[in-house]
Image 1 (cartoon, rainbow, N blue to C red):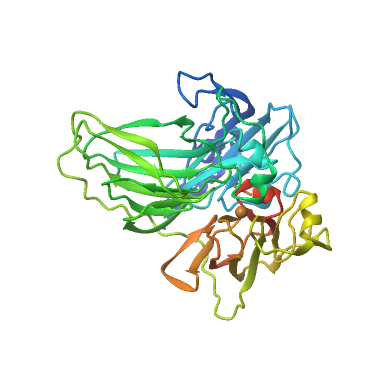
Image 2 (cartoon, protein in one colour; image 1 turned 60 degrees about the vertical axis):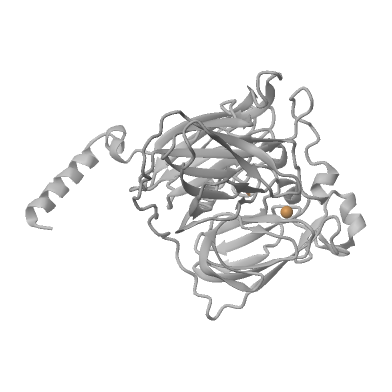
Amino acid sequence: MDRRSFLQYSSMAALATAMPRAVTASSHAAKRVDMTARAGKAHIVGPDFPATDIWGFNGQVPGSPIRLTLGEAIEAHIHNGLKVPTAVHWHGIRLPNAMDGVAGLTQAAIEPDDSFVYRFTPPDAGTYWYHSHLNAYEQVGRGLYGPLIIDELEPPRVDRDLVWMIDDWRLLEDASISNDFGAGHDRSHAGRIGNVPTVNGRFKDIVKVRSGERIRLRLINASNARNFALSFGDLLPSIIAVDGQPVTPHVQTGPVVVGAAGRVDLVIDMTGDPGSSMPVTDSFYRESFDLVKWVYEASPMRESLLNTPIALAPATIPEPDISHVEPLRIVIAGGAMGGLRRARLDGQWMGLREIAQQGYVWAINDTVGNRLDMPPLLDVARHESVRFIFDNQTAFPHPMHLHGHHMKLLAINGEELSEPRWVDSPLLMPDSTMELAFVADNPGDWLFHCHALEHHAAGLGALVRVRS
Ligand code: C2O
Ligand code: CU
């Protein structure tokens, strides 16, 4: 930098300090978002049914997408217009502990008629989401969630950037939400699996597309517990990011799996004929169904497909060095048809029957995760590399979410991935193991739990402490 440009800088700086804050803030101002968590109505199953009473941010489900550009700060003013306390978690964002939104751990709950301001600057571009983190199995189940998109500075060229926030509702015949939140069967089996799968709050929605169009499709699974395996018919989606973090683009030939809380970013060239239609089908569980339908408009957008690059800039998460790190085995046990006989609850060994009488059925390393003030599963110094082996000894899949960090998924069932990838909510299948590693670089007490929300409520959770 030559002298003249430096002088320019210093006079600008002098000017900046002299100016009132509201003015200087303008170029680096945090984006202010105001949202009220409150009751609302949503037309989920179409005009033949009454609207459904939901809880949503600003009374909507999903809550409006929050969009920032990488480097931009957010200041989210959350008002609680519900009759119950709440708090907002920014799922997948590596943010300061006090902003993580876990009521009872990182902040006090936001009481009815009260507000809380969340301030942070997301360090990574990508697809994330926000949701209630208090009695989440009910509050998320009633609709308290929305997309959080951090745009890259130079996003790949696409014709449209679509967000599909996928959910799974348990509705009664009058389209009202079944109130059996936290039912014993859901807690001990697959979690709350509903009967009305939706995209952006609508059942069997239709998405208009044009032949030749290139779409970036951001899948976000906001279901309490339902996992998805989506098939796109003749289309050849390329996966460009998982759980918000970039991967080397690769065409997915089989179904695209999105576990509860997971995200997958796809780039899809719409190769169907003008005027045709094609469903997107799910086949994760025994019965498959159509989730949404693409309907092509009569006129094509272009004759030959776009050929521009779709790769995202690589992740900027610190790489763990695990050459001298012993793995910590994390055994997940319990649930129906599981082998758990006894475990520690509140520090006491008990038989499963006694534990179940208190509503708990799962354990991590023989410990029921029933409280937020329990001794941590892991206590590490900041910047230490950590190595986990998740071992699912249960009959159900578990999307295991670690707050405040991304973990690098290295191996599944002992087989190393050709391209390890960053994840925050990997779906751990029954009788399976996963090896992951990360740098514990974000100080605080962080929740680590199954994102099948009924499982978490029934004890499938723990704490990870990163000392500062
Ligand atoms: Cu999506 Cu503990 O959170
Ligand atoms: Cu689970």
